[in-house]
Image (cartoon, rainbow, N blue to C red; front, side, top):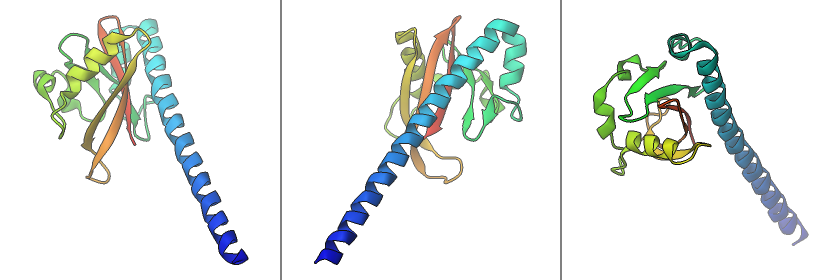
Length: 156
């Protein structure tokens, strides 16, 4: 009986440790997304649109790492002005009507969320994970600045 209780106790402690690490990883991703958006806005303010957009579009640059990258969109229509990972999405007017598998208008939500608070906000949606090719939840931190929406997302 003692051995069974110890095993259950050890399993429970392991479970709690996994949950704590998982929660910490999610918090780290959230912080990384927020920090990268703020860093992008600072660069935009310092060097201007043309130079900062060139930096954001550089897939080998410092604003693209792991699964994180900066997207800047028009603050009214949501048209992407930068996208280092898929440049074909830049200036594509059809993105405004893009929906996830749950019929959520992704870009519309990002624009509305970014404009709703000067501090920014989270836009959540379901999208195909590029590595696993399976549907996954994606969280994107969006913040309006100078008539544009700056965003960085990650998969959960």
